[in-house]
Length: 131
Image (cartoon, rainbow, N blue to C red; front, side, top):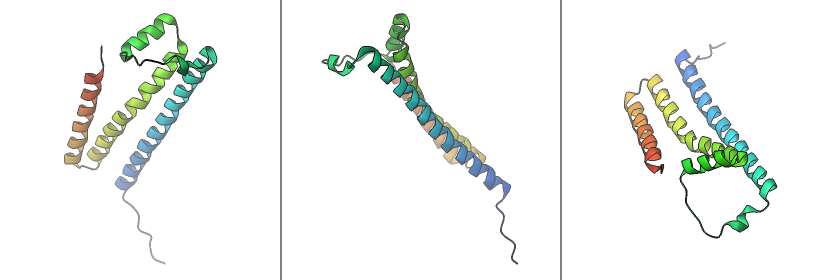
C-alpha cells in the first residue's frame, strides 16, 4: 500500500480562497440579476410597454436617476439601479480578491499588478460618473 500524497495545507487554503472568489462572483451575478429582473418586471406591470416611449436617447447621470427615483418614490427604478450597481462592481471585487490571492501566494509582483488594475478600474469608474 503506497501512501497517498497530501497537498500542503497552504494549497488547500488557496484552493478555498479561489472557490470563495468564484462563489462570490456567481452569487453576485445572481443577486444583481434578481434585482434587475424584479425592477424591470415591476416597471412593465406598472407602466405597460415602456419601450414604445423611447424615441430619443437622453443620457442622464446615474446620480440624477437615483435622485429622481427617490423624489418620485419609484421603487422599481431604485431596485433595478441597485442591481445594475452591483453588477458593475463585480469586476472590482474580482480584481481585489485576486490581489489578495496573489498576496497569500507570496507573489508580490502579480499582487502589485492586480492592485494597479484595481486602482485603474476605480479611477475609471469615478471619472466616468457625471455628477
